[in-house]
Length: 284
Image 1 (cartoon, rainbow, N blue to C red):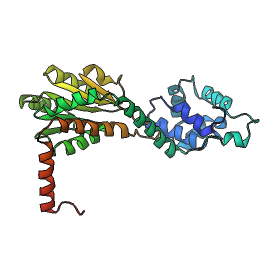
Image 2 (cartoon, helix red, strand yellow):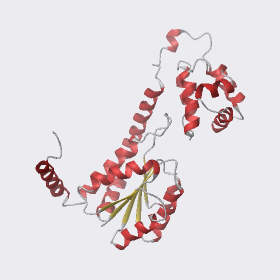
Image 3 (cartoon, helix red, strand yellow):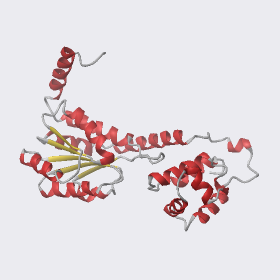
Image 4 (cartoon, one colour):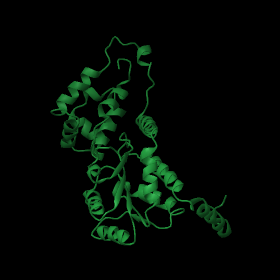
């Protein structure tokens, strides 16, 4: 680490911590001012990030320090020594916060590729999803776009896909309706921050006899206890809001596995393409 840049050292300090959007703004401000970070007062950092001074204190505590003074001492101790040469410091490229977020997502995808070296869980999930008629797909808040994206493509090959992307008192009713219509499995996308409604909905789904397949950010996510088959795909935490490239790609892999379990999938796709061409849906 002696040759790494101050920005890279700061980014490493933040990795692995679940920070709120406000705390991430503070982190980004420190990365942007990496050279000055060890010398900023809490008031100066608060003004730089556009947050309150107590937010800076909570940020330091979230990183495991007793308070901001302890964090600043740590940063000062981490400043490259005066004896380090410019050539030594230049050994590692200096990436800005946006590039670091992309590189972190690339690492998440590498981890997912390693996980998929054993295709068994995804293939099993594909069979479960293909065999459920209808197929409820659950995703609330941050995970709603994952559920809708999966549902959009799944509907092209699966005869009855029901996307559950809204919470409220009707959620359990919609799960029960799917079960009564013949559903045997439920697919859930669960991403941080994890809504209590999702945990409750999965517990209810299992009580009603549905097999729960879950895509979550971690095998230790709160939904794990209510999932029959959980496949993890990490989210990126380097920007103010999580990025979910790995969960999205895992969703597409599940779609592929589900298609393998649907003998009529190819015929349905060809029918859709023919209908789309006849209607002039696309400009290609």
